[in-house]
Image 1 (spheres, rainbow, N blue to C red):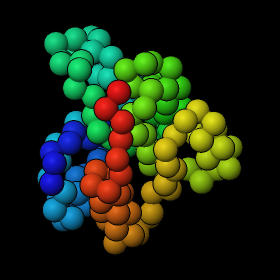
Image 2: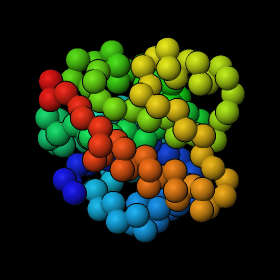
Image 3: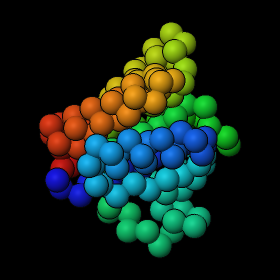
Image 4: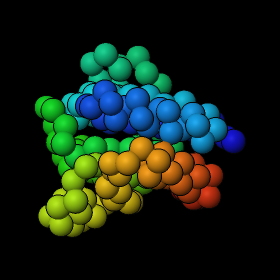
Length: 145
């Protein structure tokens, strides 16, 4: 599998661990960078603050974005991603515990590529992550622009 980088934007340590375990058990060996709030996600993507030395031309292949984040909300992160020419086409999957219609609608209005509610059951959680990885990292084709 092509080793495309994933950016996981998640503040819950348990969910981070579950995502990492699910990718591992699904033999998805992509590198995963983890940031724990919306501000850090923006710093990572736009090479600011502690990420100022990161190679900014290296855009992740996929962003898994929680909505309920400290400092800057997931919706605001999504808005900033879509507003920047460098990241405007970056695949962003909202992966959140929310099932509120307003969150779903607003996510798609702001340009989310997909909205997935985190399953509570571990087996379903694992399956969702593995299917997500298969689709977005192997099957889906993205623009190089």
